[in-house]
Length: 288
Image (cartoon, rainbow, N blue to C red; front, side):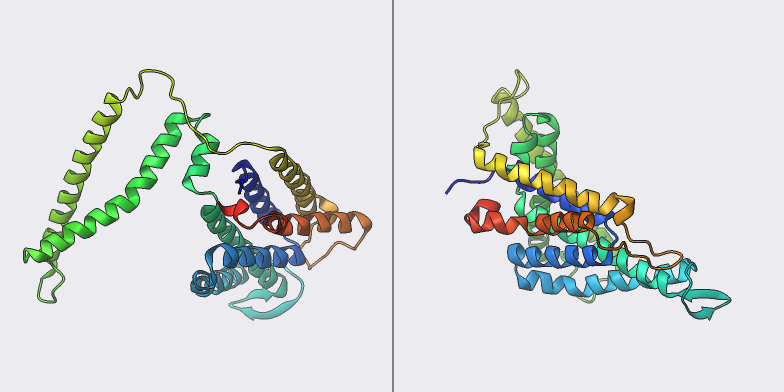
């Protein structure tokens, strides 16, 4: 089964994230959140999404309460606190911004699941080879350092020097953690020197580095890319054009429905649902 080119999902997530940040219409915000939640469950599973529900509710609550405390604009006053008006408009705007924040984070999470490291390297390897190598090395070393630190702690515990017991004092814990960290850094630096020597022996840096890419841009990828760009432009128009934006101050104002609004809103929803088109042609083309 042929793989989809990484440029297609990259531009898709770029457009949906930009549309999510700029669209403040309540219907569009709700549609964005529903689509981001659906694709999060689709690509990462319900169990992973269920763990995010508490911080989703917390983020929405914090932004809502924070905006009600800091902003006192609006005509519909709920009550007065310390002489300041708590308004419905401030509450609605804070709730909207909280959902927008959560939606963008969900899209970033889904993008991290779809755009794997090999796809990122395929996109940027030829344009920024040194930067791509640095980023890929950093991303590799993060889980590697975590595994090595676990090995160091297990070795120290086996030697009776661990601090997992309850009887160790705080200064003793600090000294032991410092020793473990020093061992970890020494081990990592030694491995980095070996890696650098190995790269030099293979001729790295002697000439322009070539890169192998398994992805090929085909006509089907061009069709998907053209549709995503078209729908993305329409979605950004729905989010940015003054006649289609929602205003929360001094009172909530929603644009009246017209054929221009219907076209833009239809393109916006089409962009959110477009991965289903790719999924319908073969579920593994989007993620593999």
